[in-house]
Length: 452
Length: 113
Picture 1 (cartoon, chains in turn green, orange):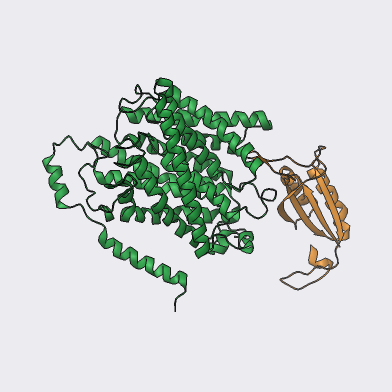
Picture 2 (cartoon, one colour):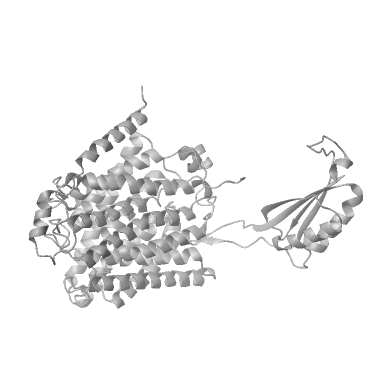
């Protein structure tokens, strides 16, 4: 008789095999539609860029694995990387199966998409409603990479103490019950927060959908899971800062795809987003470095790369809506505010957000998503909005309301999901397993040999 | 027989090895260790979290010698490792009760050299 977990794995495997049959090839109807449309509708330059952008965003997940991996102790490096890779596999499949349909499919009541596009049925080579010059399927591919990296961000909060089986179940549930609805609200056609029939919240590349969402889930994780044993005094420093730097570099590189790719075409808007992204990352990295230098007497590598990531996260919702000056301001603010949240707030409230997933992504994302309500201007994006500094104060309030709603929803539902998974299977490893390290206790592997 | 343990600065290892070889002392074990003396090391900072009890990298050299070589070993290590600055290190000398060569099973002073 198989154990509960073993039976679970058998069902999952069987389900995957059945699902393979559900994944739909491009139907004849879409082919006909494409042949009937004028040849200029699909633009090969846009397609080329969006394929590349999708690949760039995919690279951010292994990049995150290195960024987080370098920051944990040696005995836990594989656990971080395994979590990232597992998400890459499992959430990609969930996205293909139902995630894309739930997030971007035909609207139901403004809160969720329906299951018309189960298995990407009907999502073919003709352009969809979201991107006029690329195949609908390519848009789904691009969005898949966002759906993958968002739950991976949460790993930073519960690093070094979560059971792998619990992690897999949680990530799958979170992607379906938190990420998909929030993506629908902000980006889906008919979603109640967004610009396609909603309140008019703008979020160019995922400040709300990705960073606030994951950041609040991270906070929930921290509160439900509790601190690592020995926090805060007996926690070892990062075991491989060069890995963290490598990871940060891959994230920065991938962020061009994350932000500039959200223009959904190879056009001027993409160029603006690229420049805004880069400037904000550069300025925030510098600001954090200077703050470290002032406060501790020396600039730190970890501080600088963290600052850059904070800036990149903060400018994410704004990159396609602000002028370069606005992006720089957002970078400055992100550097200062996130530095304070990691230095002062975490120490004051004494919570163990191991890798600052809330402190950097949650806080940075919230800041940027509200800041776009200040600095957005139609001179940067004629199809965009104007913010408070450009005469349209209402946008600021819309952004603030939307961020608060998403933050509350993500926090509450994530908290419930953590509690649920804890109840079913247990979230944390035992004290012994935590001391030995997750690599050995969860995966029976060692990241490094000590003796050859 | 004596067992000598020396904690030295990592960048002095090559010089110490040269001095030992000059005095015909070839058998050593070298390991990387962390340690500090009275100067308490350099406090590391990671995302504004100051590490307490900072340790610095050192090299540990271990040599087993017959009594007649003990002073020569001490002199060699002193000459090689000394820079005159704080952090040069320390040498510890122990009485060595027994030595056995694994390959042949011989014991005592002949097993050392």
